[in-house]
Image 1 (cartoon, one colour):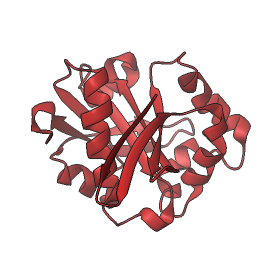
Image 2: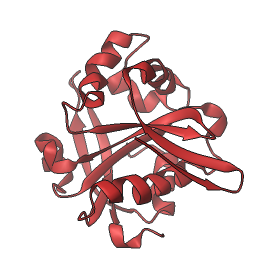
Image 3: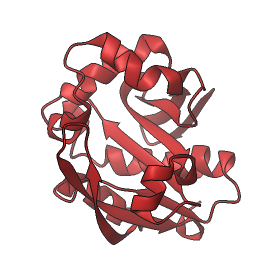
Image 4: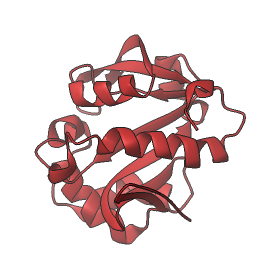
Length: 189
């Protein structure tokens, strides 16, 4: 599936992720601006670990949908969406089981800080998520509390900061996240 929106001289598009995209996913997560937020999912240069983490999602076995973000036809990052309630441990932490969760990364360093993330996420929520989950009333994104760039993107889109929670990690550490919510009715058409 592919979707695209063109305004001015930039086309924002999304296509379903494939296994062939995993080398880019690893590279995007290792980019200097993104690496600290992915330390808990550290893939290193290991495509096998990327396959373990994302392969079942790509194949539709797990309920998280994976998308490649394209700017003017070039892959620049990825985004995923899911019903929070399909992930019971996460649903308890966020206290939003009926909401739709989204996670995103603009992986190309040259595009960071230029408003692309805001535009991408707005378009994704409006054209992809709302279409797939037409009855959803709330969207949720939960970045690390120190991720100022991501929090700014969410704020620009109308997300409201709410519950802070600690998400346990496989290494025994915890990441403190902020559950940001968006009332679907506030999305600008």
